[in-house]
Image 1 (cartoon, rainbow, N blue to C red):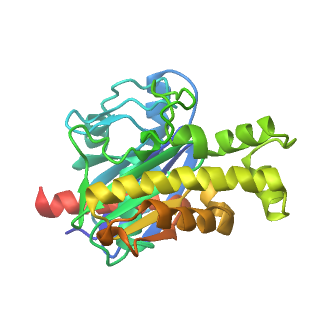
Image 2: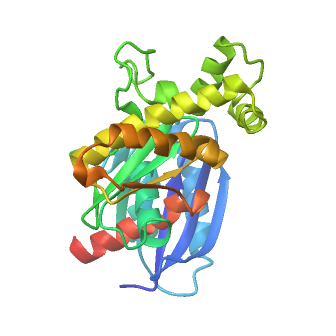
Length: 303
């Protein structure tokens, strides 16, 4: 294995790239806002970032790991991020390999978050885990038996669209009652406003809940219950060791985790689910880069 892996994280608001060593340490990091414009303007920003980060390398780079907002198509090497409308089936793997001369490996951003936490974060030493991001949207990824689980297209683990309310609100995915329509930050705030809360956004909702506001506390409890239902369902299917939760809403700490863990005791009734741990993510915004490098390392070892 080479000394360094070049990692790329593509999101709707920012592009990040970094160098990760063989022990999973992020030794260099750079980022830039995701530009608006046509596909080639966006690609030019990515290519420039890759060039800048490669110039900081003081050791051999062996491969590139790519984390991208989805949907992704891993077999085709393309991405069609919902929040980057300029890119539809954009051939990111081909472009990166041509620009760098290195093999490139693609994963969804939720999968790479899970891989990062499994390698260097809260999930170290565990065999099977769900990484879950609870923020403006809800996403996730699965590491099963110590390996990334892509599924057929690369979109496995997209837990934000587990249905928790069959007669619930319409979701942007085209379905109805997804956990994202209940527990994501904007939906927490929207529900609270319909029940008399006068605040602006999820950040203020968390502040008010911490101050004892009854409606804000109910909003967090309702969202936490929906997340617990999702976790219980996924854990029953995948026989997980651990669930790692990150993202903006998860930064509210006990406001989310205390009712979540309490609800999980209700829903996770099978013997093999008892004692399932739900913990806060440790790597923050670096998880995608570290996980993208872990993904590349895995493919380098196992093909």
